[in-house]
Structures are given as C-alpha cells and as structure tokens.
Image (cartoon, rainbow, N blue to C red; front, side):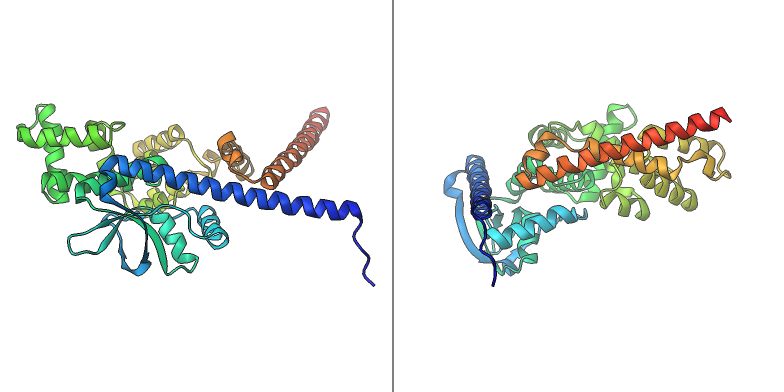
Length: 355
C-alpha cells in the first residue's frame, strides 16, 4: 500500500506548483508587454492606419526577404524559443509587408517565424503593414538593431539592399559608386553626382548612424569577398568579423586553413592573430609550429575564462529561479575544483624544486 505524503511534502509540492504557475504567468506577461511595445513602435513609424494588428495568416503565404540572414542560428536559443511556443503558444511579433499583388513579405521576425515552423504551426498571427519597400527595410533595421539579430555581413547586405532601392541601382552598381565616392574624397577619382551623394549620406544618417560611410566602404564591403572557408566559420558565429577579415588576407589556402583552425580552437585575440599573420607573411614557407601554439590544456582554460566573462547580470535575470540556482551551484563547484587543482599543482612544483 503506497504511503501517504507527509504534510511537509504535500505543502512543498503545492508550493512548487504555485511557483511554476507564477513563473509561467510572468513569462507570458513579459511576452505580451514586449509585443505591445513593438506594436506601438511600429505604429509610430508608419501610422496606426497603416497597420492591421494580429491577423492570422498561413505561414506558407509569407515570403522571405531578398536578403535573408545566412548566419547559423544559436541552437540553444532556437530550441528554447521553439519550446516556449509549444508551451505558451506563439506570443511574439511578426511584421509583414503587403505587396502590390496582395502577397505578404516578411519585414521582421525571421527567427520567430522559423521557430513557429519548427514548433509545428501552420498559421500565425502577424502585423500587416501597408508600406513601400524602402520603409519596410528601415523597419527591419529598427527591429534587428533592437534584437541585434544580424551579424556584420547580414547588416552590410541589408544596407546595400536599401541603397539599391533608394538609388535605383543594382547592388554591383552601388558598390562601384561607393568606392568611387571614397576615391573622390581621397583625390583619386572624379566626384560622384551630388544627388547620389546626398542620398548615400541620408541613408547612413537615417538608419545606420553608428556606422560611418567611410568605415562601411573600407571595412564592411570587404566582408562580401571572404573566402568560402572563412565565410563558413564566420557565419557559424565562431569568429568575429575583424578576425575573419584578417585571416582572409592569407592567399595561401593551406596557411589560411591552419590559421583559421588555430584562431578558433585557441580563441586567439585579434592582436595574436595579426602577429601570426605578420610572421607568416614575412616567411611564407614557415608553417606554424607546435611550440608557437598554446598547450591544449591552457587553451581550454583560457576559452573557459572568456566564456565566463560573457555571463552578465542581464542574462542571469532572464533565467528562471531554478536555472539561476543551478548556475550558482556550478560556479561554486568550479571554484572548489580550481582551488583544489591549484593547491595540487603548487605542491607538485615545490616537490620538484626540492629534488
């Protein structure tokens, strides 16, 4: 005969259920608040009369943007979003543009749309915006800037697409015009037409105030020509764009592959990477020797150190109470292990010195 739970166990279980319900309520309220804030921002940008709120449409009818992100998704964040949709229903915000033919094209919410598909949804509620292509791209930038969804290459492609629309030119023509504009300032080419220069300045002032047009041309456009091996690693999120550009300088496929593998495996700083490139360029027949590399044990610890630095108060605040406690427990265990290992190694070093 099964034993009855004690009063303590009964009340403990009841409290856990109440805590779980409260946490669920708070998460749903947070999602609803975020959706309301985004809708207000959308209506402020285009006018409430141009927005049809919360219209359910088949997902299959939503067209993708011409410059869809090529970056691989964070598998953990994606899985959590899918699970959230399955547990709470879809409560995010998807913005779509109604095109001239009546079809719908995504403006913002690509990750949420992908998660809804992965969760098995066939239809979804969207906010339909009656607007032009240029404004649609600007709206996309508003949302992506808030969420920081795009990597630098995606951001570059989006800005080029916007410039193509505003200048009524192809992407290749825009790139050529930008380089001519830069060369003209440096006295190496005739100036571009004044009206086109004004449009370019207006675009950067309006939607990319944190990026100067000079930096965009000198740095960002180089991302369009990354070698395939570097591009694949960069798009996976394992390599910062500054490091990707540095490695792309190596024309030798073998040396570039070596640099790429080491930079990722040992989490080299940009300074270390540049120093290695400089040495290889001065002596291209020399391969990187094992003596020049960090020991794998040291590299793993240094990588762990860098990962710990990414844990911020903001990220922890988004965790559930249970996840926060597990994090603290893991840090305490790691602290104890590191202290014990430190004492062990110091003792060994002293013993060796005494011999």
